[in-house]
Length: 270
Image 1 (cartoon, rainbow, N blue to C red):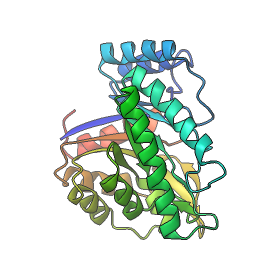
Image 2 (image 1 turned 135 degrees about the vertical axis):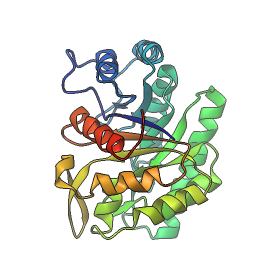
Image 3 (image 1 turned 90 degrees about the vertical axis):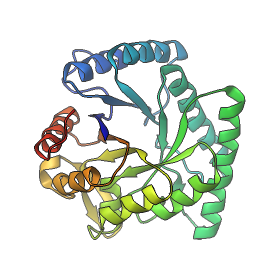
Image 4 (image 1 turned 180 degrees about the vertical axis):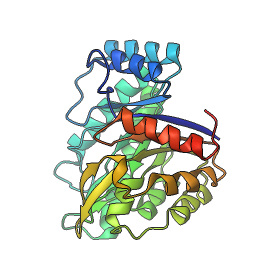
């Protein structure tokens, strides 16, 4: 199994805050991945994305992109603007050679499950058509979400991905933990995803604080909710071909390094 670890954004220990400096720092730390964060908006030109991609290829760093938070494919009033934000992220991702463009699909609002599912599928079909027409070689990554009010259970995401070419599931271990109040069997979750035909996964990990409404805020890995060692054992025993684990902890690269040490302690060789 190949495992790629890295931070969600430029490492806090990087000399500068630009993306290329972040990629260089990830390489210095002997990590293997970095997620480029467009969560507050897409503010990178295609030229800068090209530069980031060149640096990543030179250093062997796997890139992904997180699209803006201001997305809701379940709301007819904002679905077009939401698709545009995701597609803007896809364009930059294509230029930098990113594999997956991660996004939160949306909120149910007044919609029931079938209606929300239908809207997300339609929006993803629309976006996948654009990707093919433009020749942008990226995947649409639907992320498992952490709030009860959000669309994004594993079953919902797999339903979309099974019907829309170019869509892949993104497992956020902390979000799933929060949505189900800490009562979740990660082995069953991973088995369900693998059974759906996915043996190469993009995932997020951090610890998380939650309420009865689900996710509240991300925490450092030492809070052990969820316990990374338990998740690591599930991953290592899963039979996956490869997995990327992006640290969304407030400690970013420090907790990515903790994860690497934990995996090495369980016998994995990077």
